[in-house]
Image (cartoon, rainbow, N blue to C red; front, side):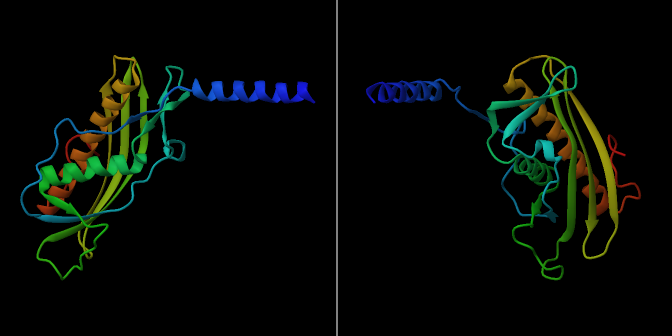
Length: 206
């Protein structure tokens, strides 16, 4: 009996020591190179629908890529918030910074309740990849429509950012840059719609 208790105690010690040696979790966020200006009143209203992501990316762990094209799930590197929320924040920042457009998804405004032009925006991230030592690639497609039943545009863009460094922090920075560039193209397409441009997809998008 005593030998069994000793064995159980040793197992418990080993289990606790194993837990104690687990690497700490590092948190990363998608950050714009420069924060948007927060002052002023909205000039446009944009309802940003939930960002669509491939299922393999819809997780807390950062997912990078190897040079052989394999997925590299970083168990000790997590996004600070769900990745869809991280992308949404950069998109919201770009809309405000370039158009002073306010996101109304959480607080919808009736079409006849404001004198401001209103739009609905749906963005799907199709590729969100980073190969440390090579590059980061952010590719997305989106549809913007003037409400209630106005002109619409469907565009697509692919952004490649050099990633010569191999650290996870560098990968997060490169993905941030790519997402910010994509977000600016989305904002520019809404601007072109608002100006009744016949080609609403801006240069850099198709």
